[in-house]
Image (cartoon, rainbow, N blue to C red; front, side, top):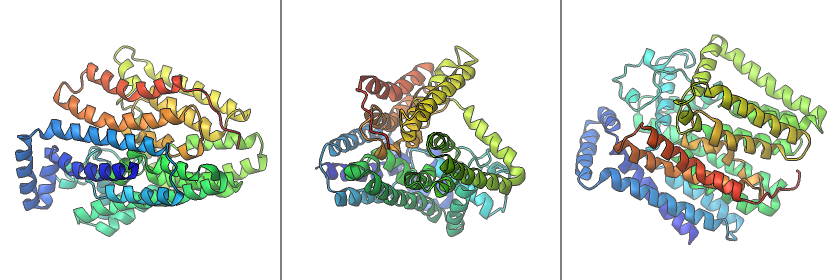
Length: 459
């Protein structure tokens, strides 16, 4: 029954994603530039559905499907499901969602625009923003949100997305399919890595570990659906953990460096894994750090003069306020960055000390820090950032954080219809900022303080 409910939920959510497109007048106009007939048809459907509650009804249906999906997901975690069934549906669910329209985020269109900048115009994506060469009236530009910014991702990310850009060139629908197929491929590759890791190092929880991650509705919708590139670095980080557990530290460091060259966030994971090694594997620590540092130095040398704009773009990202506690504090206390940065450093230091003393595993240390960082300390929280810790949940066992993380993923996904509601009733007001933030953060925090502390044995 749980598999049936999840399958039906993902089918309905996939269909709803195309209805959600009808709410985006700018996107419909842009798509009309690719095909006049398509634009006319979408506009006609939009006008018709506006008379039948297009905005409120679709938001309600989306929320109901997400609630049903998470209800079935939590129920599946209580059931005994065979490994073959766990693997089968871990492939079926994202295959369904692959056919959805990326209505929850414009990021995939920013990837497409960046690739066009490189493929069509031959420009350096780390020094040249799309707006420098592509006019704002261009339909590809109209679908994006960050057209005036340079690419904030590493060379490895650009390598893979360049392949998608070369495969699709000027065909919009082929380009959209290629840029969704890439994260789907890495999702399935991650499934293989997690399965192998659980089989070798956590055999007692192989089936449930797979279900924990690959049946999670947010994980599926934000990777196979929205096509976020986080799944690329997650794959390399998972592969790094596999070799780290096998004490092949040079290969692990190499793979984790590749993860950083997709997106910068795995640096935090590197710090925890290195701290663990320094306390018990000095030679391994040298191999791990040597491979990691060498690859990243070579990557920055490859960027050359583009390093400064690239790093500037990373700093700019930290100055954005969205769905966060610092966003709420900022109007009251203008120096909030000092407080929240100091709090993060204290949290990081405390967790590292526990890892060095072998009180907790490095994976758990990373998850603890990132859990509280995303809930309380980051200045910007996009709904898919929970992926940064969710990908490690198959390896945590029964800890105090397991349920709060899963609840965090549920509130993050359910925050979308709440945000859509705010667009109709006072979006941007402090009241809505408080409501959305508390909706996302309070349930996982309440769950954390309610849970009993259960620590898994040291690895």
